[in-house]
Image (tube, rainbow, N blue to C red):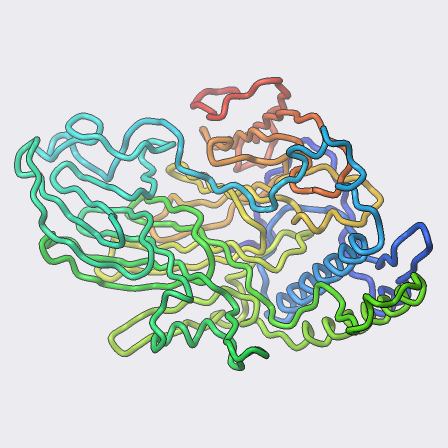
Amino acid sequence: MSRGNNALVLTLLLLFCSLSGCLRALDDVINEIEGTESDYPSLELGERTRSSPALVQYDECTNLLEDLRNAAFEESLVSLDQSAYWHWTDSYYYRAEPSLMDGAIAEEASFDDGDTGISSPSVGSTDSNSGEPVAGTDFSGTNNQEQGVDEADFMKTDGRWIYVLNNGKLVILGVPEFGQLEILSNMSLEGTPTQMLIDEDRLVIVSSVYYWNLESNDPLREIMAFDQPNEWGYYDYRISNLVKYTVMDVSNRSVPEVEREIYIEGYYHTARLVNETVRSVTHADTYIDGLLTYPELPSNYWDIDDRYERMDIWNNSVTKAINDNRELVDGLTLEDFSPRIHERTNDGVFTHAVTAGDCSEFSSAEDVMSRGFTTIATIGLFEEETTLQVDHIASSWVNVYASGNMMVLAEPANDWWWYWGIDETYEDETNIHAFDISEPANTEYIGSGRVKGDVQDQFSISEYNGSIRIASTSDNWGRWWMATIDVMEDIAVAIDSVATGETDEIVIEPDIPDCLGPSNHV
């Protein structure tokens, strides 16, 4: 993935702020701790502005590390400020009417781009003139959103063999005659296998491997844990989950062979198979040991009746927490933030370097303040040996769509905590990032745009003849501290011609279907 001066940007016909964000100096934050009898001792948080959604590729690791440190520190400030809010005020939940309480608390976790749509069945690349079984005619396949783009599933078939992930095992069934089945192999898999993709004689299985399920002597367990035990003698882990890609040679269905075992730190989103290339999307948000989100108060604090005395102690404790967090964050390295890639070989577990040298694998929107990463793993299957390309995008949880030529990531323009403590009301907006996937084993960044509202799932995204169509919902999702309930509004946006970055039209309709079909208009 690359972005130079000629990188194309999808420009939307929308109004948004053009100022760049910055962080307030530490001394200013501490000096702004104040409290009155009717208020709470709030913190002065960093400036919140919006500018461009375009991804900027890093060319120096020092710049990347500085951005990550600032994002982690700013998020900790928000957590400390929220702690003061809950501690010193009557919160909204206690003030709200019972009718507003029901369902008012929005879950923070984003929806996955679940594979629940119904579309034309399509599997692999069967040829009707070759005598091979034809998908959709001789056998059914995965209900894919787009023709020619295979989506990961727990069961796959090419008409001759059936592949099933069942209770931690890969089961391969033969179909000697229609209506007959025979078990050819039954192979145990590591972790929790969830989905797979197949291309002729190669199979890619996606599994979740949890830290606490690894054997005590597994080298991966040592890699995932911190070096020193905690105060109770246990080892905390910087990240608890690995996404495992098992590349298998199934040319002999009776004896499938493991070719490659790749582990990426984080959680699994989804995967697509286009042109003999698997592109899998994961997300990682590492745990920072020792980062304080609540002040450390003395043991007698709760016995003090005087409000002002307690507030003085609280403010001093918060000041100490801020200083401790700043010192901790400034000592973090890129390895503390970045999702690492591990590979199991006959000689043990090998950990790939975080970067090839200049951190050009990493990119971020200009105004995004996030320490989490969405990773696109591009696995080429067409050569004798599989290839691996990795791109890391600083973002929160995303929804993923893919056509035959383009992959689209839809991510919230800002994380939930970004909205806390700002006077200006920002509406929810979503960044749309487009990638060229027309070439095998290669993923290339095209450009970005921004739409109002939230994108609910993959079926709210579509690409047709170079135009991206988005159906979004405006509802300020995730801002649980707001005392008003917004009326949801559906928004449809057509971004015409990725090549030129022009916006075709913005149409607001009361009812928009969940799936955008292949037509010239939304």
